[in-house]
Structures are given as structure tokens and as C-alpha cells.
Length: 77
Image (spheres, rainbow, N blue to C red):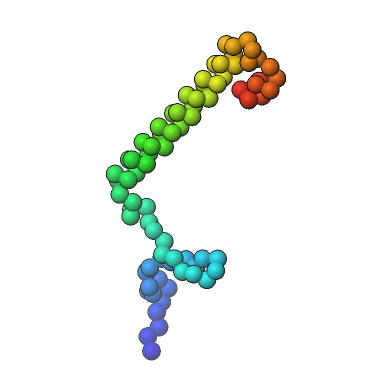
């Protein structure tokens, strides 16, 4: 009978889900560089558009007299 010391067993990483299901953990190195670049560009574009849109809303409230009321000030803040 062989007795294994600490760290001499199976080296695979897995975790047990909430319902007893087992799932293998995926490391960061499994994601390709091109996928990371494309995802970063898409998320960066989304963030840029959101900031630009919010800036337009704030500018419209600041410049248009009819939009300057309490409700729109709350939206702009």
C-alpha cells in the first residue's frame, strides 16, 4: 500500500458546485490573446459611448432653459 505525502496526489483543479456537480476550473492562460484584445476594445467602446452620452445629457440640461427643473437636475447629477 502506497501512502502519498502532501502535494503528491492528483494535480487537477476542480470545484464542486452548489448542487454537487463538479466543474473544472479554467485558468487565465486558456483565454487567447486575440479574444482579450477584441473584448477589451468592445468594452472600451461601450464605456466611451456611455460617457459621451451622459456628457450630452448634462450639456443639454445646462444649455437648454426649458430642461432646467428639479427633476432634470437630479437626472443630471
